[in-house]
Image (cartoon, rainbow, N blue to C red; front, side, top):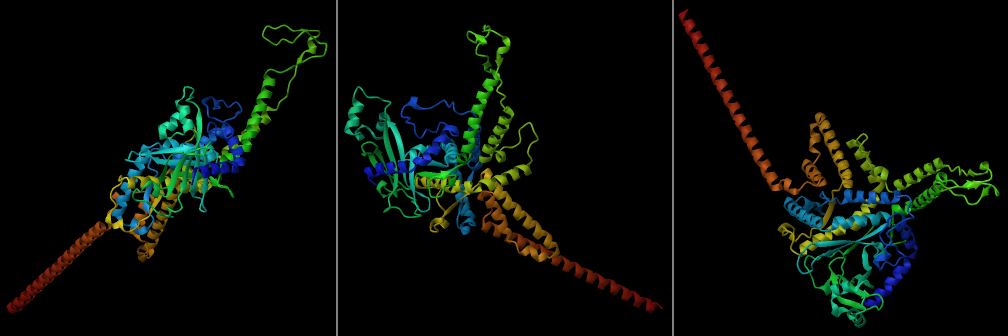
Length: 559
């Protein structure tokens, strides 16, 4: 993709989303402040709009932040391990040696993500997700030459444009940057500047705060790209399936060298997919009408309260001599004191308060606040059953959105980190049993919002096992139906138990073989002992019988 085509395509994409930008701008003004106005030029620090005097109620702002924080804690906790790697083929998951290797890889990948700035940037992405309906997260290597970790960046929707394929995957990505000359020189060097830019940079009248529009484009190289291909080793920049360029917006000239990526470095997540559009929709868009009404209602209430606190004064045309002075210690001359009265507005603040509470509750419902909030600390603490019921209800309400977030945002993040580390030799060597198998990875999430599903599955297993135990009391053959080894290993996988805590199949067979041989030896010993006791008893009986016979014979002879 050449530089002129990139600039032209960005202009087309900008025009195509002008309608939704009006909605985004309203969301930014009233629900998600400080994420960049869509129709304001903020090239200068003084252009940032810090004060928001038109926000009279913060219910929507705080509800959006609360939902974003809940997603952060429930999906990608900054403290607890929130994912584990598994094989897509169940056969490989039964290989304990392979699972132990994958568990070690899981810990290294998770530690690398935790050591990066992921927790900081993902929270910004969640906030964009629940407000604008779309978020963009990028992941880059800190150092291309040697391994020095990874870095994430949550890109404001204002700066990003993208094109997707038939499956919704990002094909081409465009970011509209505004850099100073110092930033450009730091990135590319003085030699990369155009002649006009170099003259301006070296002149005495150079303004260091002036910003220049630059388009950063990541595009798919169709001749290099193959669906499902994984790069286990690094290849040359030109041979990678995704290329990137920096282009000056005004003149359409490329700046710096063309680069490449093994995978698409940007991940686009959507709260809910909008029909016939690449952009998503959000809870904030649903709550926008109530938010505007609530702000207007409170604004009118403040005007009414001002008149109620300091009401206007009424008098007749000739009742007032001079000006009305309402200041402390002021003097007003009237012809008749009865002709000077206060005007009572008779505003219905009770009606206003009921309407405010109704609108605030509607906004909280849009952001699932009633399901997310537990009882206050001063009240009766929530029981484990109540919390479980709340999480199940939340899962039903947000299940579709959470599934989309994991597929579009979290899955590519974990996979790209794994591929980064594998190519750089940061992961342990793959076992020989997997080297030629072509095993595909799968990701199992372990956050609080996923534990409800696991707990429900475990309860079903426990109920079934208890049912089989009851039936076996009537029909012992029922115990032969369940695959107890499969149940135990499956439960360990659902609960995220490390493979190091499971015995290898060979060790299990060896232990069972030794136990069986020991039991057989004990049974044989018991049989021999029983046979010996029986022979001894028979011999003793024979001896007793012989003694009795001799005694009888001797008695007969004596007679």
